[in-house]
Length: 400
Image (tube, rainbow, N blue to C red; front, side, top):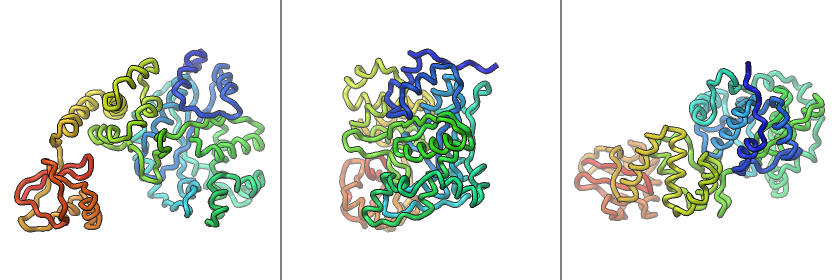
């Protein structure tokens, strides 16, 4: 027999207390009442696998979905394998690059592995559903697409902020981009859901689903809008498409180092969204000061993805390498023939992508020896074994 839903108001408020939920439609109060009612809700989140790696902004949303699953609700992770090939419109100067089916499948395989630490895919009593929107979207006929399109006007679609911006700036808006909200909206109809989780940048698309579900099935759907993981001081977002943020496919040492390299204003957002350290510990943690507070948060996050022992080892390695000026034991080692081009050897080893990038790093003062001596000549040749520090966290041991 399936475990009943948890309806205790205090437990529900604990789930919402970390501030992940920014807004709910029609309202947060109505959502809480529905969760209190004892009805088992069907709740989904959509992921378009458009890149090989997920970042912490995605992970925090899945952590929230997992908490709803633990409350007894039916949750679905929907892979937008069809919509990923359309491309969600952006505010950039061009439409997104459309992916092939093979690229989407490869990315999805990577994502499934990456999300295992944050959402339970094995629970037999209340399993997490995995679905693909190609199952229904690929079967729609032109007649059916036209019928769906009758539920929206061009004026409604152009009101989406990114379309409005591009329209005013004279940047092309392609017809297939108008279809994206329609396709995502139909996901709600096809799965007959009660609620959808989305980032605040996806509210327009999620509300399109609310419209279609109401008109086609006379059913209301909650839209639960989650915050975007951003630097509160600069507003910079973790972004899959921009390649920014902390990606969760990294090893424990790399992940710990990436977290410690984030600006200090990110400590509180990471604590709230990406850890489950009790809220009552927040003030004491922040009082530790930026470095110790960030290390505590980083250790918790690394522990979630790689285990407590790996997190402790990663913190020790960070202390040795960065806080105490040491060199990591696992630093990449490459051999260079005497008098040979160091840049060529670094490119072959994948340390830098090109000689242009190598020169840029030299010009920026980002290449130093382990003795903190800055390399200023792109044609510099080591006389013997030397360790180079490239940027903030890369070390390469050069053997001549």
